[in-house]
Image (cartoon, rainbow, N blue to C red; front, side, top):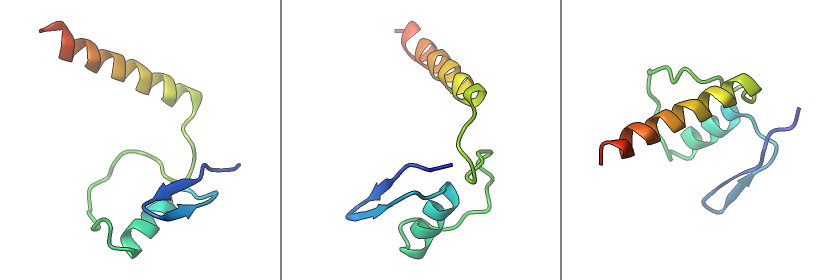
Length: 69
């Protein structure tokens, strides 16, 4: 399956995985390596279920942040 293109500064990375984007960012010293696990798979796209869960979490965060104002 195809992955999206990503533009980082003047560079365009075409048809790359998250792992390839991470490798580019490290190689160009845009980011520094860390040992923390993000809990997000970088070797594949998100499933429909994962997207739904992210949308639900975003809605929950928005409600928490703005309902107390």
